[in-house]
Image 1 (cartoon, rainbow, N blue to C red):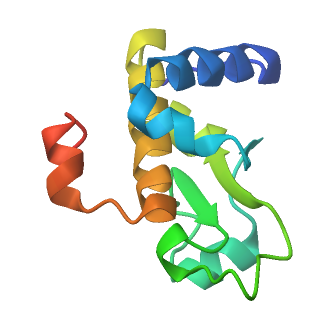
Image 2: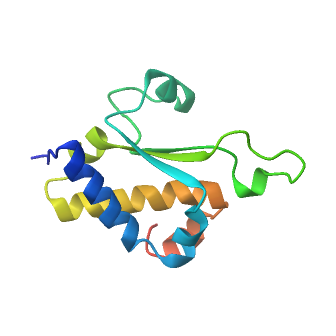
Length: 126
């Protein structure tokens, strides 16, 4: 059984999940947009080499801190996309959904910050 929320309910779940993220990670997100989409676009799926039958839960688009240069600042804000339908499809309760949203955001932030899987495991997200 999957959970199905309205857009407004899902947005509130994202906010609650975001607030549970450790401060050491959350503090780096001041200039990162978190955008909720129903599902990834065809272009996003192609970029990731994925299909609509096996979609991502989230996607980071931008330049990681490791890849930035003071001489060439990014032209657009970094964005973390959270995909509602794939997340709902794998969860049966609101608590489970919020935990999966939290994990997804943390993993996408890790791409932005250059945090490796070992450190994510230490933080409880491995």
